[in-house]
Image (cartoon, rainbow, N blue to C red; front, top):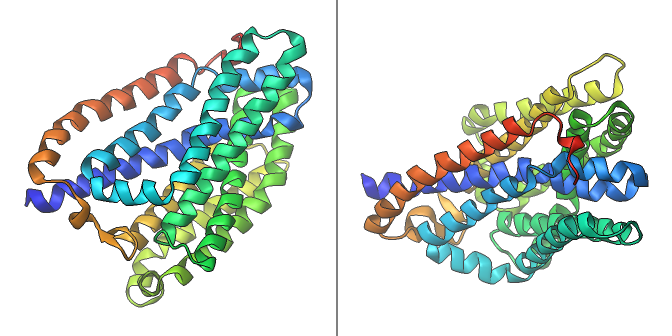
Amino acid sequence: MMDFWLPLVFVGVMGLALLMYVVLDGYDLGVGMLLPFADEHEKDPMIASIGPFWDANETWIVLGVGVLLIAFPQAHGIILTTLYLPATFMLMGLVLRGIAFDFRIKAGESQKGMWNRVFSVGSLIAALAQGWMLGSYVTGLDASLFGLLFSLLTAICLPALYVMLGAIWLMIKSEPELALKARGWAKFAWLPMGLALLLISMATPLVSARIADKWFSLPEALWVSPIPIFALLCYGWIGMALFERARYRPVLMFFALAAICVMAALGLAYSVYPDIIIGRLQIHEAAAATESLLFVFWGVVVTLPLILGYTFFVYRIFNAGALKQGY
């Protein structure tokens, strides 16, 4: 029984960690990509809006990759060996962001603009690399022309989601003038994000006949139909909130966008299962020895609540007045 359930538990923990990363670090990557479109006096408040949170946000990707390494070493080796180049670019982007974030505080006014640009470029590089890695993973690490084109499509599309997250985050955290501008950015990104999700949803079944069968054969299609329907409803509601004059709380818009991410994650999990690498390696084949998983399990039992608690603590403490900090 342990042989069956422990790998699934670790897959669930890994999926949760990566989902939390996409939503939480996604908005601060989005804010970074929006910096070039802001006036100079708006850039400090934009950075301040993510200042207390971005370190905590990046903790989730460390947990996700750590679980992959420890619980599924064979899959970790295949994935990171195949994706070493985009993974390297992602790390370079994150390093550039970290350097720019610290240096822009200490730099004089003459150099702050340069570090703002470095922060923005680092955010874009990280987002593009993550999109490429996601697209490559969905294709089963396919290196054919179709696989490369799909990875390119995902690399272009994922930043649109991050920009939407970043714009709505700024609507929540900013003063009225900047919040109004952020609403305009969100309006501009809303349609490209929707088209991106549509294109990826249409292309994904082409990647694998098995995935197509799981989504379009009866009765399975009826059981999973609530996933795209709920995502479409959330997307439409966000559009109404952005374009209609009626007032909607941006916090609810952020949660609606997060719900779309959750639906996408559920759809991906349904498509991939029981594989951990589509068409190449199954979850239970890639799992470490049961004794090793059981040992690590108790570490995760301690670590995961600590990370959740730390994240909740940071957001609760710094929820108010983040714009007043000297970031």
